[in-house]
Length: 312
Image (cartoon, rainbow, N blue to C red; front, side, top):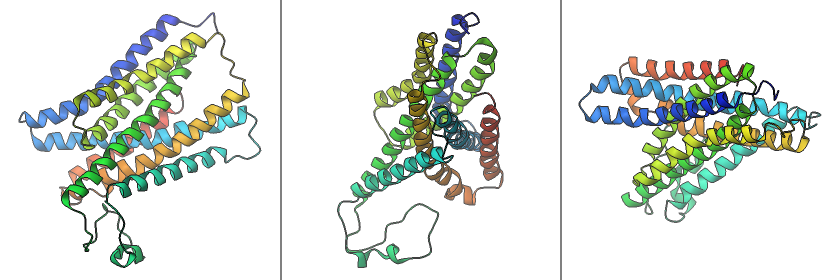
């Protein structure tokens, strides 16, 4: 492998990934500015919905095919192959931790508890798939409390999504940094596509979170842009000494893939797909072209990442 290993190609791929990630992030903000500059609202909305659908598809497929599924190989390499469901055990742990974190953040923003008799939705067997609605009661929250609750939850979503994408980005960058030229070309193309649409989805979540500090937004963007290249750099630096047969390393990567895959799947379904597409009041009432664009994007993102899974 050392004879075929091409450091110049690896460094070139590193910069290509930075550019792809940056384009994805900037595309979200460019579309926001285009609307303010007088571009056709219908065209902008359609394009945003298409890209949001692709972003959702990319995140959900990354979680399932690129993290949870691939975790199985690492558990096998680690000798944990007597029970085939280990990737799903850790994925379920990630989903559980995400749900607990989600409800704790939601509770913190509501300003105290209320008597169960005042909380009418607790006794309902039917449920709604739309956004949660507060029941009117004597302890109903003020507008400021509701806004604070929504803000905290949105910021939480943005931070957790970024955290998981950063871990995943370092892992795929590390894998790329170890590759020889035969595997490198399809893998770097796949990763650039992957980073482009993940960057767009992340930028949309950051914008929706209501974070006002431009510095924090820029920092989050640069962190996403640089983590995959950091992983590549680690791979370049360790390719001669890396022992792919080390069981402890394989087990660690398997656990991280499964656990982060569960968190990313929860975020992709609960905090992206559901509010952006399925439960969007706007899509419920918009002309049929707009739901079509959103769900075409979703199918495209899922299909593209599933095919990319052949190489990356």
